[in-house]
Amino acid sequence: MMTRRELLALMACSTLPKQLLANTNDAPYFSDVVNSGALPSMSERLPKSPRVVNLKAMDRLPGEHGGSLRMLIGRQKDIRYVPIFSYSRLVGYDEDLNLVPDILESYTVEEGRVFTFKLREGHRWSDGSELTSEDFRYYWDHVILNRDIMRGGMPARLKSRGQGPVFEVLDKLTVRYSWDVPMPQFLDLLAAPIPQTLALPSQYMQQFHNKFQTDADLSELIDTHRVDDWVGLHQKMSRQNRPENPNLPTLEAWRPTTLPPAEQFVFERNPFFHRVDENGKQLPYVDRLVLNVSSAEILGAKVATGESDLQVTGIALPDYTMIKEAENRFPLKVSLWRRTQGSSVALYPNLNCQDEVWRALFQDVRMRRALSLAINRREINQVIYFGLANESADTVLPESPLFKPEYASAWTSYDPEQANALLDELGLTERAGNGIRLLPDGRVANITIESAGESTLETDVLELIADHCRQIGIALFVRSSQRDIFRSRITGGQVMMSVWRGLDNALPTADMPPTALAPSSVDQLQWPVWGLYYMSAQMQGQTPDLPEVQRLRKLLDDWMLSTENEERETIWAEMLAIHADQVFSIGTVNGGMQPVVRSARLQNLPDEALVGFSPTSYLGIYMPDTFWLDDTL
Image (tube, rainbow, N blue to C red; front, side):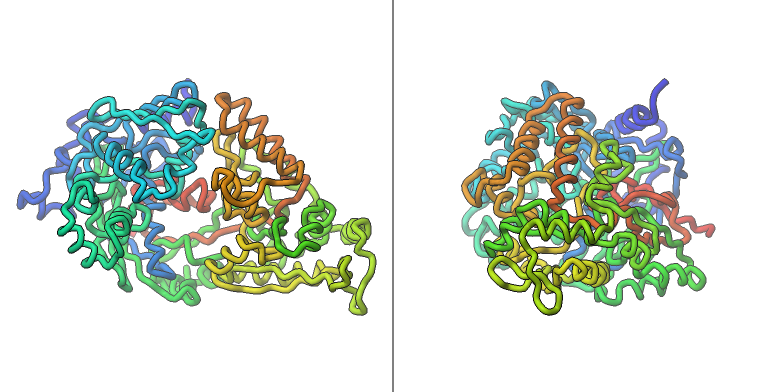
């Protein structure tokens, strides 16, 4: 008998009898333009083998077309959430975190290094142009390999052992990417909330490329779109993850219709979207998404007055009581989903900070353990999270197949006595008159924690942690700034310690890359200089000098060349164990609750689920194209 996972994977690739793809299943939204001949009928718009979403097998209801969904965003740039929510990918994760073909009809993987992708015959971009291997060829030949556009060469994440793939067009619908060594993270890159781009609508994009356009026409377009040169023009017009160009053809469920700046952004259904339900009805069910820009400070209050039909971003647990009470006055339903971060709030001692004394202390595991043992996580959970979260280190969640209880409990007991003993061992035995310890150079042990200033939860949690740390003779102070400044100061080593969320993806499987557990990016708050070293192919930054960090990097390199799931599980287990023992990030609680607000008419959202940027793409893996409005309610 097939497992549910196997069944869902099969359904993702299945086909419908031709008679079910009748034009009677078309959205009424398109009736006028179809009848006028301006738009082909549904049967002509769909791929020959559309992706069939069997809702009944997913314990959901087949729906009806129509209606608009209002959402609130705190900034104009937050329209970028739409392609994350829509989650149309070459391959994507389902709710069980299995990879299934989506835009692709099928794919094969040989030896973990040869990936062959088959497109759906007749699949079209939102402007009606065909999606073919030529769109992949265009991106490869004229973007990836173009040193004017890619000044630093091929993106590092497309390389394995420093080498990129060989790209081949096998036929109109088939392309292949081949590496000399395994590339196990490739499919995960394509399924990410912000996926690796492999194709662009070539017919549209050629007008902005110097190989296909005259200098005179390019000059006119450069002036029109207010950019410096043709490279800036091409980049601006091709941003798939920032839907600011209404003319850029898309493969997502909804296409943008509004050119920024604006106070309201409207997305309308893509007439060529490739998914249908089991009855042959083209998805999405909802016709329009309407995003209204609101001040982030009052966004929660606006949700509580019924101004949003679907809201998962811009609100947090402190808004829950107010919004829940609004259920009595407005046709809303409010659920609490669990967040996917390894810690709702985590502290990151900067092991690369410029201050030599603090750098030496933070690189000593006793300092990191002492800070962790000083935190009263039970108090944080009860006071801030209403006792609904899990008191835990910054690690994977119990829902992950890689979870072990010892990862969550490592150095998380509230034990000021042991914390004080560890600091005494470090030689921090002298204290000032106010009880704060003195550093080896005579300075008072004051730690400034820097924040991007985007979360009231962070502020509330840090107030409690500051009280906890004073009991072990450490004074904490918080400095808030804007995110760009926050990030640049960390990279420059000016930040001693920062506060942010924990692991972005605390729901990994062994087949997801463990990049967050080892130096791999300049954005990693605990070791930005070491991360830059590997991100820049060892051209910038510095190599790690801590044995445990060197081991983590070696394990990550081993994972990147692995071909067997069992080997990957072993690597993950050792990396998680090291991460827990060494406390490179200091977690507080995880499994915190995220309010999810919907119109009482909106169907097919789970009552309980996990939500976060990765791996769920917020709502993405729950397929918002299958949400629908029940007019009988």
